[in-house]
Every structure is written in C-alpha cells, then in structure tokens.
Image 1 (cartoon, rainbow, N blue to C red):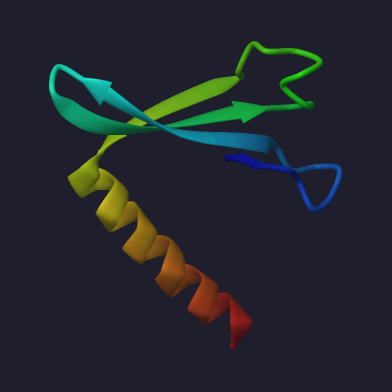
Image 2 (spheres, rainbow, N blue to C red):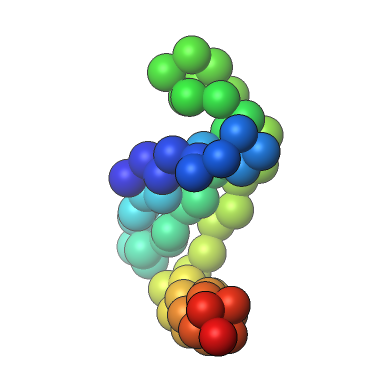
Length: 68
C-alpha cells in the first residue's frame, strides 16, 4: 500500500508485509517523493506483528487525542 502525503511536507509511505525466517514482518518505507520517480527509501522500519500491533494501538490513541 502506498500512502501519499496530504501536504507537501509529508513523506510518501509504502507499507508491505513480508515473510522473514517463517515470521511475518511489516515493513514501512519512507520516501520524499513518489517511489516511482526515486525507488530509494529515506527510511525503513521493520516491525514484528507484536510491534505493529502496539504501534497501531498508539497511532489510534494519538489520532483520537488530536481530533479532540
């Protein structure tokens, strides 16, 4: 999945699911422009399913707080 920035200052994010040594890994890559133009990510984050679950929970709480 490719998440496009909503403003010019945000990054493009590509989120993928990989299988590594039998365990699923969620990978998040950050790009300063469309990866079709420059496929080299500025940042890469690999999360275990446990780490991804904790991160998702934290993001939900932060979004709820931001909407208040």
